[in-house]
Image (cartoon, rainbow, N blue to C red; front, side, top):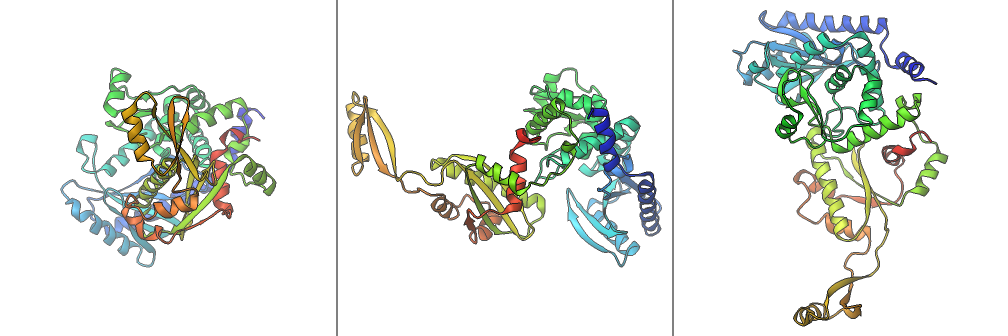
Length: 444
């Protein structure tokens, strides 16, 4: 199937219908009317995010409502103002306080998740008093620059990223934000053009749509660019792609190449693994260990920051004890955190050779013999070797010692002490892991 046919078929599945859009706009209008009734007349209601720009996927209908207040309002009052307004406008609806740069209200009404965010009413970026203030400017910029064809291409890009777990700026994913997707499509002029460009990216990649800077080197120095920098068109001091991890960028490049070599509708679909396919994959993989512990009561951004540190520390600990860690994967079930670790070795040999000095260095040799007086010593060529007993030979022992250490992030110490380690496969975690790992076999 050719690329144009694939695009048409995929868009039919992911693009909201005219009826969907009308229904969404009606709900947005109701929310605006109800909030306007309880807010002072100098406050303005604005919709940001993908719904307001026409770049939202059919199955993603969350609405971002910004309550824009005059700059004379004290920042400390923002939470109270919005919380009071939402409570008054929707007294029977479920709501909760969430936190970003400052608190906002998450409202559940009309079968939707609505984020009501306070921000200052600004016209220019120089006026901003908080990070969220620029969101309205982002919306205005995209609506001015984007074409109808580009909107379709943004949907294709979002779906392409979403099914490969590369979409979303939250710390769990460290992927492409919706705004970044829009800017990339605007810059390259379409989905296929972006994939062609990405398949040939060489780091550092610098994108400055509004040409704020004279040279790419100037941007790379300013933002310490390692892989990619996308200068925010409404704020030249911000890198829109700063949150995107190296791994996400690398995977996007590889997926772009794979798609261009063999375009397929399957790149836009969530694929379930059959038992037969799973069995085949397991043959290719080494030793899988599943470490689980109770999920601490933390907001996602804090939790995933701690989990990333925990994962890196544990891998480092295992590597320092001579285990070859091929990869690891972490999953939040809601009740538990599951960490899958894949190692080349299940157990290590009971003894380890320690290479000593050459026989010509008499003093060093004597010191080495004293330091390893209980070990078996032998000569290997011109070097003395000590055969020492290995203190840790299994993953079980290594994990047991690791959880006693003080390097574990503070908020994870108590739950981690209640860990369970098993090689009994947790199928959901395994499925996600294999899908993430087996990028080159995406089409097999």
